Image (cartoon, rainbow over all chains, first blue to last red; front, side):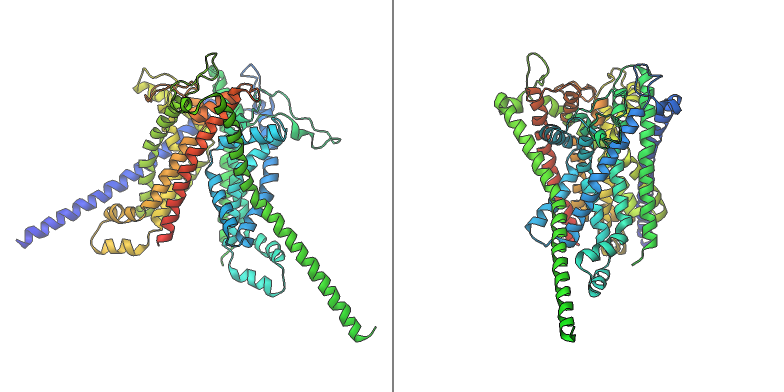
Length: 302
Length: 310
């Protein structure tokens, strides 16, 4: 009697343990599926793009002949747009983060700003394109320029910079702030001399992650009407050092989109090559961000 | 100079320094506030622009026709402005994406939070971060030139542009979002609950399914809702791989356009400012913003809830 009950219980336990094992294996398989998708994406990009990935590809303008076409205008455009984006998003984002974390009183206004920042992070990127079309290009009359594109992407990544700035400031213990005040520092002196140096690692990580997102963004820039066939580089002269801001441009993801939407398979090779460059670029940036985060966490133990 | 007048001048100087210091502090606070206010101005400007252009659009096109029309042909001679075809395209691709991302994301989240050793977690998470970092136009290329040909072997009649392939790829693209928010929610469940379940003789899987999952349900639903919002607003994957022709259908093997893809299609042409075509993309954008706004707000409320309970 007791023997059979005991066996029943053992069988039940064995069954439940089996369920445990099945789930563990099933979830590892799910992870494997994700890994296989990622690998086939890389393989597809690099295998198809390999014949075009040479020096000439980086130093040629787009062309009607796929073999002659390259990404010179696109990567220069991407670099210049990123420069503007960083120039706008970094100071504004850090300042906004400092305000919300260190200055803002708990009132309706700071609540409003806070809800707003979380909300902006969820707005589809193409909506920023409509904002840019209506505001930067038409109202401010900046046209389809590098400046418009840079500002648009800056607004897009602003929530990322703000949130990471706040998180890194929050990680600094109160004692440090109080010690600075105790020796007579003003609030700004405390922030500038003590908080910012300690939170720089975290903030830098956020900036790089934001920029890696911006460099792959396509939709908002298509919306402002970024030209896809640009066979020249922006003029640069010392007499008018800021003239390039007004130049029309193309960027890597738009160039890739342009090639991938053509029917000829030869252009798809170009698209794959451009995609490979883009993926390597974003992975390098993300890797750098992860490395920085890791290093600063190691160095700082409160 | 006498001793007392020296002391006086020193304190005046200190006072002046103090005054200057206060002024500088005030100025800095104002500048910082203005920076924070940029985000509010962005939202206000987005709403203003969308409302202004949509207002002009709805002067020409009655709202009822817009919401119930089954034909969207603004670029044709005989233009019709019914949003339903764009809506159906968005709905179908979103549903497919969620059918991929929700089961996979939830399973991975349960595994990472309840089963995986630290070493496995540390190697799976960068993999997910890598997926999250890939530009969407690259995913679009992948859907069009890898996944579609693969699916065509199973479904030989499927055209090169269809909603199935970008839907599936979009599911992979939003998988990291769903798994990371769900995992956070599950890890926030206090260990006492797990230990209680183990003490009663539950296995890991039983604990995960019957104790941790219900306790983290509001955070997990937040993950799903934010996932829906991402899928609805996703642009480049569908623009590349689903074709750009509005098509009122719920059949995933047909080509169609989503709201976002339509905005891309119009933007690729030359837009005369003030024309009705120019205004259509703002009306479409307004619909998109309203949809994602509601989803985001619900998502954030749910997400806050699981944080407050424990």
